[in-house]
Image (cartoon, rainbow, N blue to C red; front, side):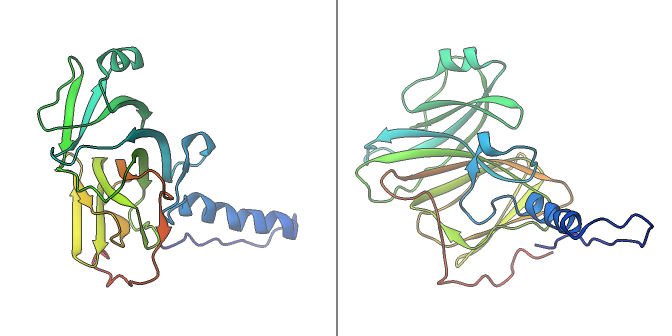
Length: 229
């Protein structure tokens, strides 16, 4: 990712070396934004606007193998309404300024209320005895990218604003706002890049083996740069 340059003009009141170092570091922190695949809890976000933040983790236990499962995304006007409509394997999340009901269920599932936004799947499951659904929000400016990483379960995205490009050993996947959801199977290395002209805002799911770390850096694959402008 390209970091902004900083310049200083000579003036009578020269800042101390410590102040200069702080000014140089601040843009790096705001732009990097936990893009190494780890992500931080949204409560630790502070004043940062860019990056990847965990909004919820739901322990699901065993999942059925004889039924195709999907990520259902529904928007509500209030948390109370979303809680009332929540069913099994449902999670109410406040993310990107809105209230959502995220549900892992078969293709026919519907909540009694709310606005249906998307259904993403079928979700390819890894071999695991117990699963967790980890929900996140991703906010990248154009050109901002993650480090190469992988997850112990499928990762899925739905982009609300802007555009993103995912590169894996299988090629690239581009998702624009309002377009179909995209998925990367568990274990596959990837790099995510913000593309287009707007700051990209996406809802994210990792449906993973509950006993393993959410993500890890991948050093066994080098991207070919397919997502570069």
